[in-house]
Image (tube, rainbow, N blue to C red; front, side, top):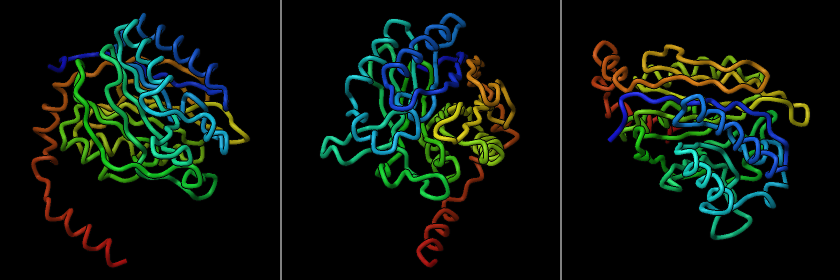
Amino acid sequence: MAKERFKVALAQMECSVGDKEANLAKMEEMAEEARRRGAELVVFPELATTGYLCRDLFYELAEPIPGPTTERMAELARREEIYLVFGMPERSPVSGSILYNSAVLVGPEGLVGSFRKLYLPTHSVFEEKRYFRPGEGAEVFNTALCRMGMMVCYDAFFPEVARVLRLRGAQLIVCISASPGVRRYYFEVLLTARALENTVHLAYVNLVGREDGLQFWGGSRLIGPTGSLIAKAKYDEEDLVVGEVDLHDADRAGVFLPMLRDLRPDVAGWVEEATRSY
C-alpha cells in the first residue's frame, strides 16, 4: 500500500566519463547523505554509472539487467532501506552489440524493474541511435512508497509517454536526463506541462558538469500535480535536494483540473491515423 507522504532526493551529480567505479562510489555517498536527510527515494541522472559521452566505450561499460551494477545498487538500497532510480547502459541478453539506454529502479526488496529509453535523439550534438536501440513499452512498478513510472530525457518531449504511465496508475513519474544547457528552457516548460496535464508528481534529475565540451545544466526539480515547484537543485553544479511528495495533492488537483476525466481516447486514434499519412 502506498504511503501518503514521502521524501524524494534529487541527486544531481557530475560523472567521471567511463569510470564506473568512481561514479558508483559517488552515488553511494550521495544516497547515504540523502537517507540521513530523511529521503526514501533517491534519483540519479541518465547514464549516471558511466557518464553520457562514452561513445564506443559503451560496448565495454554496458551490463545486463540484472547484473553486477544492479546488484550493487540493490545491496545499497537494502542497507539504507531506500529506493534508488539511476541510469545505465544495458547490454541485451541476445547480443553484446545491442545496447539500451536504461533507467533502473531498485529497493530494499532488490531489483524492482527497468525502463528502456523510447526516443533516442540523433541530431545536433546527439548520436544515441548510433549506440542504442529504442525500448518497447512503459511499465508502472508497485513499491512500498507509491506506484512509479520512469522515462528518460528526450521521452519528455513526447506527451504520450507520461500520459500512458499516468493512465497505467503511476502516482510519481521519474524522468532522468542528460540535457545540455542549450535545452534548458525546453525542459523547464515541458516538465511542468507533463506534470500538470496528468495531475501527477514528477521528479526530474539532470546531469551536471562538462563532458567533451558539452555543458549539462542541472536544474533538477520535483514538480507537483498542478505544475508547482516543490524543490529545485542549483544550475551548473552538483547538488542534493530533498522534497516531499504528498499523494493526496493529485486527487485534489484532479477536482479542479479534470483533464484525466475529460480525456477523449478517440482523439488519440486521430493522432495515430494522421501520423500514418505524413
